[in-house]
Length: 55
Image (cartoon, one colour):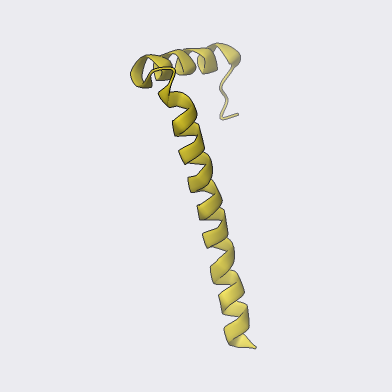
């Protein structure tokens, strides 16, 4: 994963907990997941729309 080892991932996680707090981390994960889902849907829709217009 981007050339990161476990020690680097642990350090990043600790810094994230210090910055955002342990209660905010799950909320940020949910927002990130929804954003990625919407982005993927948005990437698929233009392709579907283009195909229907060309037919």
